[in-house]
Amino acid sequence: NHGPGGDGVQGKAGAAGPTLKGKKREGKCKDRVGEVCFAKCPHPPGYWPAIVYDPNRATEYVRRRASAQAGRRHLVRFYECAPLPPFALLRDRKLLRWEEGAARPPPSRPGAPGER
Image (cartoon, rainbow, N blue to C red; front, top):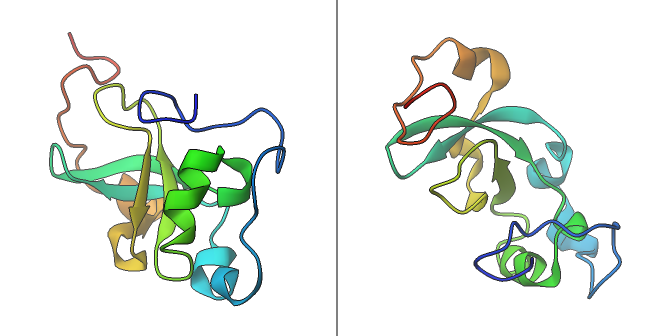
């Protein structure tokens, strides 16, 4: 569940490993935790629905990766992204508010919901 093949979500918040604290979690990155948005995904290029995720609620594997980028990048979890890893670390400029992203045409993605 915590490695590259897992989804990176742990059952209980803060149940395993160290948490991100202090200056690293300050600023814009902390303020957007829990926000549903559209995030830029690399394959195919375009924006996809996601949530800005609290690294402290992720598994140790994801938390370690996020801690190196804390304060500079957001940890986002993509919705319905079977061909891609569910988590990504993205800069603020790669996130769109929900309203702005919903106004854009969706990217075509093999295996996306509603496609055959």
